Image (cartoon, rainbow, N blue to C red; front, side):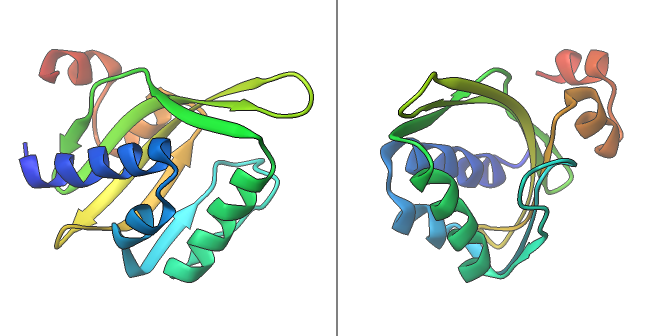
Length: 138
């Protein structure tokens, strides 16, 4: 397990939850690719740090407050880190809880590729793991 990769992904969650989008952006590689889950309102992919940060800023503008609540441990497999979380958002109407799994590809202490999945098992399958294997490694 690469402690360095885990630190980068943990730092991205901390920066988001602190509302520090400058720190969050510094963790993205200049040529990062971000893929939203199937059926997301803005399909992407978002290529490059500027495009990714514009999309993230647009998401944050939609809500009065939001944060990521981790549901699973971080799972590091060969330069990629998966984590299941709930994006909790509050706006002018009822709040919402959106459960996702993010798979982060980390190289040279930056996130180079980030893909979101609705289905945690599907995300793990992309890493070559079953849910049972992921829990055994945690």
